[in-house]
Image (cartoon, rainbow, N blue to C red; front, side):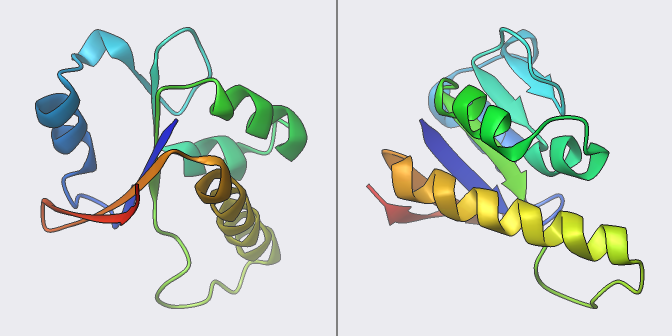
Length: 115
């Protein structure tokens, strides 16, 4: 599994399409299904409908997982949103440990953090 992280609208999805030759039909947007690529991982966690253990197992079977960086910036007042951001960060740490490759995208430019 390849983990790709980066800020909102930083070019993560286009990078995956261009570099790994996936089309729109191969990319699931915030839902777990049979697609090889999951985009917007943070939306699954913010929705709170799937346990972290179940989610981790499902994500490790994906070819590529794409997640927005949610830990920077202003800390939300809402306790549930803070908890979701924390859960997203913890899950990304676990995914990064187990990923074969981790890439951070900034302004459309990839930086390989782990290979």
